[in-house]
Length: 378
Length: 206
Image 1 (cartoon, chains in turn yellow, blue):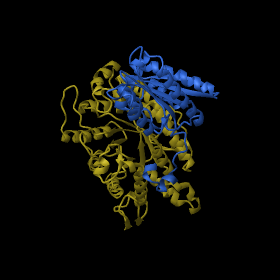
Image 2 (cartoon, rainbow over the protein chains, first blue to last red; image 1 turned 120 degrees about the horizontal axis):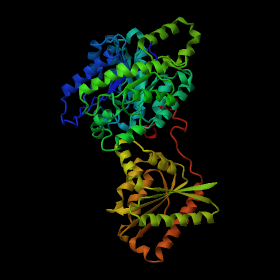
Image 3 (cartoon, rainbow over the protein chains, first blue to last red; image 1 turned 90 degrees about the horizontal axis):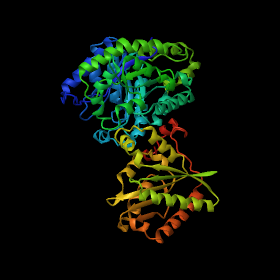
C-alpha cells in the first residue's frame, strides 16, 4: 500500500519555447505527453493525470483515448485526470469511458472532476456557464448512480431522461473509479466532495498557501459533518510545481524565460515574488523536498501530491530530466519523511485494490452496520 | 463601538487633487458622524503604490501581501469613501482595476460615498454614469450625493465646501442607519449545504 501517491499532472498546452521560438506540432506534443507518462512510471512515480481542453493551444480533448494508450504501455501507473469536465461532458459518456479504461488498465484508473473555466466551452457543448454548479451537482449525482445501480431510471434538468438504462461495461469488480473533486476557490466543490466522502484536490498553483489551507480545512470539517469519519480521515490531494537543477542559481536562470513568458503567469509578478507567495519552487532537489514537506503543516497528512512539470514551452528533454530528479532524489525522501509522524488514523491513498477490499469487508459484515458505508451508497 | 471608515484614493501625483478631495471628504464625514454621536477611525487605501500588484492580480490572479491587506482593510470597514480622477470621460483605469480584482462580495451592503476630480466641471457626470453603476453592480449602498471637484473649485472658496458638507450629511445619516457592516466571508458563512444544492435551486441563486 502507498500512503501518499506522487505523480505529475499535465495541462497539455502547446506553447512556443521562448528560448528558441520553436512551437512543437500537436503531434509532437501528444507523443511527448506519452513519453512523459511512461517516464513517470519508470522513475517510480505513482500517478499520471491529464487535463481536458477543447480549444487551441491545448491538445488533450480526449483524455481516455490518451490514457488508454498509456495504460497499454505501463504496468503500475495510475491514470487520472486534472480535470474531467463534469459540466459539459455527458455523465453517461464519462461513466462509459472510464469504465472501459478501468477494465483495460486493470483498475489503474481514477479521475478528478472539475467545472472548466473557459466560457465558450459551455455553449459549444450546449450548456450555460451560469449553471456550472447545478450542472456539476446533477451530472455527478447521475454519474454515481450509473456506476452503482444496475438499472437506472433518471430524469433531471439538464440531460435527456433515461429509462431502464444499464451502463455497459459495469465498473471493474463493481467498484467505481475513485473520484477526486478539483477546485481553486469554490467552497461548494469542497462541500460536494465532503458530502459524498470523495477526495478533494486543491489546485495549489496560483493561490497562496493560506487559501489552500482554508479550502482544505473546510473540506475536512464538512467530511466529518457528513459522517464519513474524522476530519483527519478525509482524502486530500495537492498540486504543486517545481523546476530543479543541482545548483539553485542554474535552476532560476534556466527557468526564468519560461516563467516570464508562460501563458498563465507571464508578464505579471516576478519569479521571485511568485515563488515567495505560491508553492512554486525553483531550486535544488533539497529545496523542493523542504518546501513540499511543509505542505502538510497547513493541510494535514494527505494522500496525493501531483507536480506540474511539462508546461510553458519547456522542451521534452528538460521535462524528462525533471522527472529523473523527482524520481531519484525527491520522492524517495518525501515518502520516508511523510511517513514520520503520520497518524495511524490517516488513510492510505485509495486504489482500486483498497476500494475492492473495503467493499468485500462491508459485504461480509451484517447488514445492520450499513451506516458505516453510508457514503458509498448515497 | 467605533465606525471604521476606509478612504480609497485613486490619485496619481504628489500632491494629488484627488487625495485633496478625499482628505476633505474624510474630515467632513468624521465631523458629521461625531455630531451623530459616532466615534470614527479612518483607514487609507492609496492605489498608486499598489499599481503593479493590482495589475499582477489582474493578469495572473495572484494577490500580493500588500494588496491582500488593502482588501482586508476594505472588508473590515463599515463605510467607504471612493475618489478617482476623471480620465477620458470615466474613472481612471487603475481605480477600475482595483475594484475588478477586489473580491466582489466585500462591497456587498457597504455604504459608499463617491467622489471624483477633473480638469474642468464638464466631467462631473462621471459620478453618475461611471462610479454609481459600478458600485451598484457590486451591491454597495451608494450615497445619493457624490462630490465632483474641478481644478477651479480649489481656487474658489464657496461652492465645493458646501457640496462636501451636503454629501457628508447625507452619507453620515446613511452610515448611521446601516450600522455595523456585516462582513461576508464565503468560508466562515454556513456553506450552501449539499441538501440545498440537490434541491435544485435556480441557477441564478447559486
